[in-house]
Image (cartoon, rainbow, N blue to C red; front, side):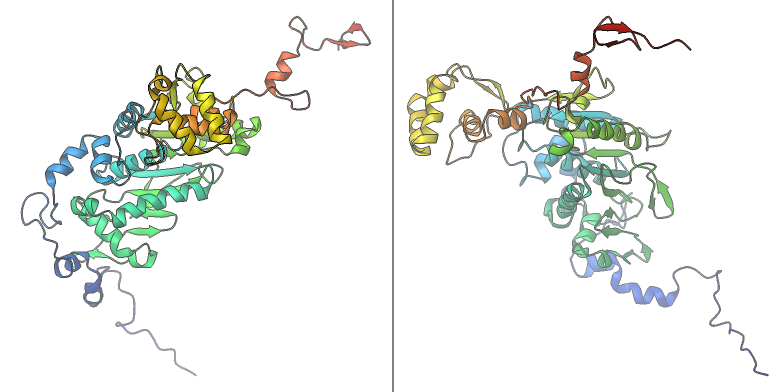
Length: 439
């Protein structure tokens, strides 16, 4: 009879031993972030105070100042993005987003294409994450690919932005050393303590360490029509629910033209998304958008009567057209189309004072330097090149209203054909009024 060997004490699992044995700690010395920063990067650590043992901040005053203002953070740490003066409307957006991040609330804002809506949202997410104002942030796009692009941009800043790395060293150094590879982010420790950082395509989790910037903060992308209801994400051993949603341009051209798709997406935002925070959570929600069609999702979310709990703001590229919009500028556009851009530019230079009179622009610094000389010229060029219909929708958030035919039924069209005095179940047959038999 063959004897069955019993497992030796050396090979049996002993649950009384620490999770990290001495041998494993020795193997992991090369993955200790504190050791790496000290020996390879020359980073100094605090030796006393509440930050003792953590990496030194290069400019503490700059960091403290930017903690108080989202606009200051964006203009200080993201100078390559916010490299020209902001418009009054952009400043107002940042101020409102700051309140939403800190106190909770809902803010939908529409601005022209190219106005930097997404860049402002990305700045707000970075600010909320690195200062620890929010714990679990979900970027929602019209689809997963659109949301992923926003998250990738945020991760790129964490990996490559030297100013951020100087003042938020621990999370940004780990992001840089991961080099956007999921496996390289795993296994890092801090003096033997696991940091449990995650740097995957569909999830970025900052390292968990007491006193560190944004400890355990999560940023994930989701498509609007994907899995959103009842979201719970693991942070170490804890399960957390989202406390900030950035719903970036949540509609497509196709969905904006379909009342049923607009209804579906609106219900998802109001139910599955904003209802997922839990009873003890104050949800912060930001929704940058562009009105594509009358009554589309963006128009509904901006409607204070329909959604009084949302703060709504809508801006166009031109606040007031110039007095010469229908005279001298028509000549300019004709020259731009039939002669050359240079000829049109010369005409504008010769008549600029009269052509500018009466105009008010949302963002005076928005024009292509070297090719244009003013924001008004930029707006008139867009109007000339794109046509009034596209320009009104994409740059003025005021799309021209289309009147549907009887073959394109909409609720408004059906309601307009209903006789005001007709009662329910009353109908006409061959010119006579009839009612269904009573039962």
